Length: 484
Image (cartoon, rainbow, N blue to C red; front, side, top):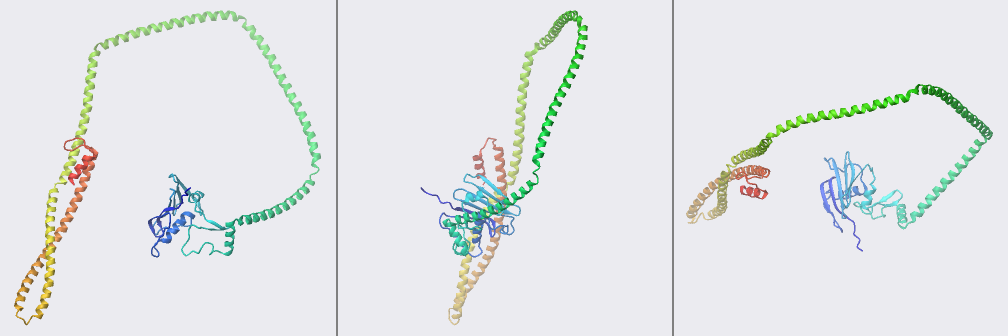
């Protein structure tokens, strides 16, 4: 089974001490950072420690003149941790191997547990209140445990072999034993105090018996009171029934004529139903007469329906033609505007032939410049020859060849004067070339600007301004290459 080693793959420091924006990529084996003093080597280690252990605290490490600092650590398994700090913000941001983002705030001086679990780079507890990082070491730091106090070393070795578990258990056991002894003594004292207080309330048993008797008497009185209320309610109902009986007898005497009234009501009901029937029939007849007149009007109005249909078709045709004409008018306006823009661009490109001629002139002057350069080189060699000649003349003053050398010298001086004039012309031509190159560059930028605008217009319109045919990006690129 192959175990994949987890390591830091990349560190990004932004505005951290001397680092404006530094990206360092690490290998899974040995990595060495070298550089002169005060070049930021220790700051890299300090930035990694800041992310892993939230050390140092505060914001003094923010680069001078900046408002925010951040350090990003990326691991080879895809996990990324970002530690950011400003005057108002203090956050951890974690991205897991699937890219899920989690933001942590309000963690104080500690590191969120999720960050510790993701990095798996813990501090080793050497003593109860002393923790040490074995993954990171500062500059000039001593070997592990050798720079610590003897007591811490012994405790650390004990923790490595597991003796600290027994020490912690004994310490906690003694602590619990002392606490239990104190609790026992306090409980016994409280128990004795409570017994003394209870002795003062021994008479309460007799009072409880008396209260039970009183409660039983109260229950008996309550039951008899309820029965009395029921009897009063029944007496009231009896009196009401007697009054209702007398009223009912009077009503029965008045209702002795009910049979005759029932017969009259039946006759009236039958006549009312017949009246309703005849009324419905009359309404139906009126509706039929009204619908007859309305249908006659509709029939008369539909005599010319064929002609109306033909008129409707012609109206629809005219309406469609109107829409087409409106679309054509809009297209004509767009083409007119595009022609206006193209004319404007054309006027800007009138100087294109002048630019070409200027470029030819520049080329000719460049060739002349090369010739002048060769002449200057010859002039330098002639100057050297003249210096040599002078030395020889000093030596040959007494010889017969002095006249010959003098004549040669005059010829060379004349050549030198000609070269001097050519050098002056070379300077003038060089200045003219620089001026012309600047003008060509300005015209080139001017042309590129309007060619870019022309390309944007063609991309928007997607229509050729000359033949009005549809063009794509490939054809537009071909047109732009032609202009370039």
